[in-house]
Image (cartoon, rainbow, N blue to C red; front, side, top):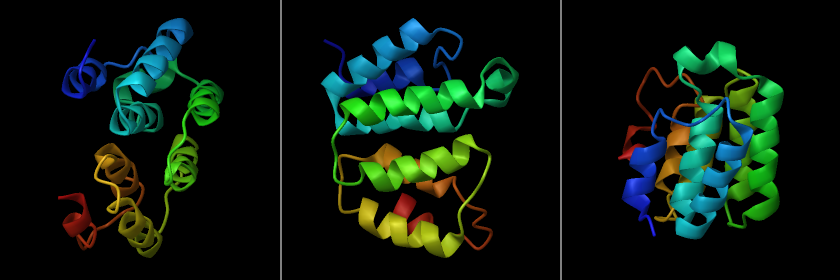
Length: 134
Protein backbone atom coordinates (compact mmCIF):
# COMPACT_ATOMS: atom_id res chain seq x y z
CA UNK A 1 0.00 0.00 0.00
CA UNK A 2 1.22 3.48 -0.87
CA UNK A 3 1.95 5.85 2.00
CA UNK A 4 0.86 9.48 2.14
CA UNK A 5 4.17 10.94 1.00
CA UNK A 6 4.35 8.62 -2.01
CA UNK A 7 0.76 9.48 -2.91
CA UNK A 8 1.37 13.22 -2.68
CA UNK A 9 4.41 12.89 -4.94
CA UNK A 10 2.36 10.84 -7.40
CA UNK A 11 -0.36 13.47 -7.85
CA UNK A 12 1.58 16.72 -7.36
CA UNK A 13 1.02 18.67 -10.61
CA UNK A 14 0.37 15.30 -12.24
CA UNK A 15 -3.33 14.69 -11.68
CA UNK A 16 -5.03 12.88 -14.59
CA UNK A 17 -7.55 15.61 -15.44
CA UNK A 18 -8.37 14.09 -18.80
CA UNK A 19 -9.16 10.64 -17.42
CA UNK A 20 -12.30 10.41 -15.29
CA UNK A 21 -11.77 6.73 -14.43
CA UNK A 22 -8.19 7.29 -13.23
CA UNK A 23 -9.21 10.45 -11.36
CA UNK A 24 -11.81 8.53 -9.40
CA UNK A 25 -9.33 5.71 -8.72
CA UNK A 26 -6.98 8.31 -7.19
CA UNK A 27 -9.83 9.78 -5.16
CA UNK A 28 -10.60 6.31 -3.78
CA UNK A 29 -6.93 5.67 -3.06
CA UNK A 30 -6.64 8.98 -1.18
CA UNK A 31 -9.61 8.02 0.97
CA UNK A 32 -7.77 4.90 2.07
CA UNK A 33 -4.57 6.80 2.94
CA UNK A 34 -5.35 9.89 5.04
CA UNK A 35 -7.43 13.06 5.30
CA UNK A 36 -4.41 15.02 4.09
CA UNK A 37 -4.21 12.83 0.97
CA UNK A 38 -7.87 13.60 0.26
CA UNK A 39 -7.33 17.33 0.74
CA UNK A 40 -4.31 17.08 -1.58
CA UNK A 41 -6.58 15.68 -4.30
CA UNK A 42 -9.01 18.52 -3.66
CA UNK A 43 -6.13 20.96 -4.03
CA UNK A 44 -5.19 19.43 -7.39
CA UNK A 45 -8.80 19.70 -8.50
CA UNK A 46 -9.24 23.34 -7.52
CA UNK A 47 -5.74 24.54 -8.49
CA UNK A 48 -5.34 23.14 -12.00
CA UNK A 49 -1.91 23.86 -13.52
CA UNK A 50 -1.92 26.44 -16.31
CA UNK A 51 -0.79 23.77 -18.79
CA UNK A 52 -3.99 21.76 -18.13
CA UNK A 53 -6.59 24.53 -17.87
CA UNK A 54 -7.74 24.37 -21.48
CA UNK A 55 -8.13 20.57 -21.26
CA UNK A 56 -10.50 20.40 -18.30
CA UNK A 57 -13.93 21.92 -17.73
CA UNK A 58 -15.22 23.58 -14.60
CA UNK A 59 -18.17 21.16 -14.67
CA UNK A 60 -15.83 18.14 -14.63
CA UNK A 61 -13.83 19.56 -11.70
CA UNK A 62 -17.02 20.24 -9.74
CA UNK A 63 -18.18 16.70 -10.52
CA UNK A 64 -14.93 15.28 -9.09
CA UNK A 65 -15.28 17.45 -6.01
CA UNK A 66 -18.84 16.16 -5.54
CA UNK A 67 -17.57 12.57 -5.75
CA UNK A 68 -15.18 13.30 -2.89
CA UNK A 69 -17.86 15.20 -1.00
CA UNK A 70 -20.12 12.13 -1.08
CA UNK A 71 -17.40 9.75 0.17
CA UNK A 72 -15.36 11.79 2.67
CA UNK A 73 -16.09 12.84 6.22
CA UNK A 74 -13.98 15.36 8.13
CA UNK A 75 -14.86 18.21 10.52
CA UNK A 76 -13.49 20.92 8.18
CA UNK A 77 -14.64 19.36 4.93
CA UNK A 78 -17.49 21.81 4.28
CA UNK A 79 -15.30 24.82 5.00
CA UNK A 80 -12.55 23.63 2.66
CA UNK A 81 -14.88 22.40 -0.08
CA UNK A 82 -16.70 25.76 -0.13
CA UNK A 83 -13.36 27.46 -0.82
CA UNK A 84 -12.44 24.81 -3.40
CA UNK A 85 -15.68 25.47 -5.28
CA UNK A 86 -14.89 29.19 -5.33
CA UNK A 87 -11.41 28.47 -6.73
CA UNK A 88 -12.78 26.12 -9.39
CA UNK A 89 -15.07 28.95 -10.50
CA UNK A 90 -11.99 31.26 -10.70
CA UNK A 91 -13.08 33.30 -7.68
CA UNK A 92 -11.29 34.25 -4.50
CA UNK A 93 -12.14 35.06 -0.90
CA UNK A 94 -11.07 37.98 1.25
CA UNK A 95 -7.91 37.78 3.32
CA UNK A 96 -9.96 38.26 6.49
CA UNK A 97 -12.21 35.34 5.54
CA UNK A 98 -9.14 33.23 4.74
CA UNK A 99 -7.68 34.02 8.17
CA UNK A 100 -10.90 32.93 9.90
CA UNK A 101 -10.93 29.69 7.92
CA UNK A 102 -7.23 29.09 8.55
CA UNK A 103 -7.75 29.50 12.30
CA UNK A 104 -10.19 26.60 12.14
CA UNK A 105 -8.05 24.45 9.83
CA UNK A 106 -4.88 24.66 11.94
CA UNK A 107 -6.68 22.72 14.66
CA UNK A 108 -6.36 19.66 12.42
CA UNK A 109 -2.73 18.67 11.84
CA UNK A 110 -3.94 15.86 9.56
CA UNK A 111 -5.10 18.45 7.02
CA UNK A 112 -2.05 20.40 5.88
CA UNK A 113 -3.21 20.36 2.26
CA UNK A 114 -6.42 22.07 3.37
CA UNK A 115 -4.26 24.99 4.53
CA UNK A 116 -2.80 25.24 1.06
CA UNK A 117 -6.24 25.49 -0.53
CA UNK A 118 -7.20 28.42 1.70
CA UNK A 119 -3.75 29.99 1.43
CA UNK A 120 -4.09 30.26 -2.35
CA UNK A 121 -7.73 31.39 -2.24
CA UNK A 122 -7.00 35.07 -1.71
CA UNK A 123 -4.64 37.84 -2.70
CA UNK A 124 -2.66 38.14 0.54
CA UNK A 125 -0.25 40.88 -0.49
CA UNK A 126 0.66 41.63 3.14
CA UNK A 127 1.55 38.03 4.06
CA UNK A 128 -1.03 37.75 6.85
CA UNK A 129 -1.56 34.04 6.17
CA UNK A 130 2.12 33.06 6.33
CA UNK A 131 2.02 32.20 10.03
CA UNK A 132 -0.81 29.73 9.43
CA UNK A 133 0.73 28.15 6.38
CA UNK A 134 4.07 27.38 7.98
